[in-house]
Length: 240
Image (cartoon, rainbow, N blue to C red; front, side, top):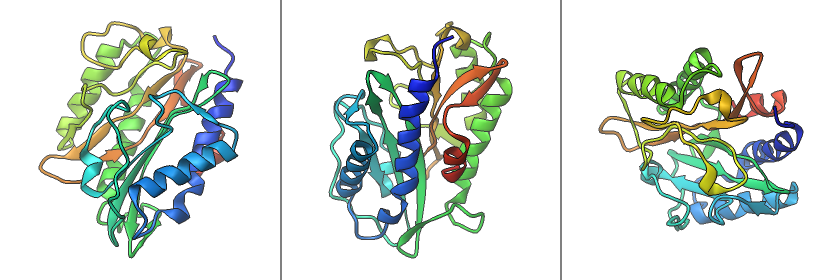
């Protein structure tokens, strides 16, 4: 098993940014401005580099939340956050060659980001993401293949009335040192999860015929054969 601590350090930086960006997610602020502030916070907290195609913060606002785009093609837009809206943020910091990777969705109501309470009109998407992560933790073992996890989760996504928006159709990847070494949670990949020291789980989903796309991403590792999210508990709780 690899040493977790350097990965925990950089992942906690990402989690702190996702927590501390909340006051800036308000109506009138633009997608590109949110991305800039995220990048600034990452640097302030000690992550001056990123591993994903020079895109430390991939931010999407409104109907653009359904867009699945590679970092090689992503450009933050001038789209402004509306009074009632949705914002997704996906961070890819790197410290000393160690990757962090974390994403969350933020519901904007009456002009500002609010906790995803059940009364929110967009709470359904947050609930679906939480259910998928809970299901993954329930069924994933070190002997589960990436293909098997992909098949089971994709089936659940469809059963819930959603679709997988990822442009390659995958649901996550191994954490590596080089981008080209990533192994994906996708069809026909027989790599066992236990062969990956760390892996992400990141369903990008929307309801069929809907215009809102939801993200929730954590890095996971196996502790006593249980998939465990990487991060300090208080930070994971703060952005749950």
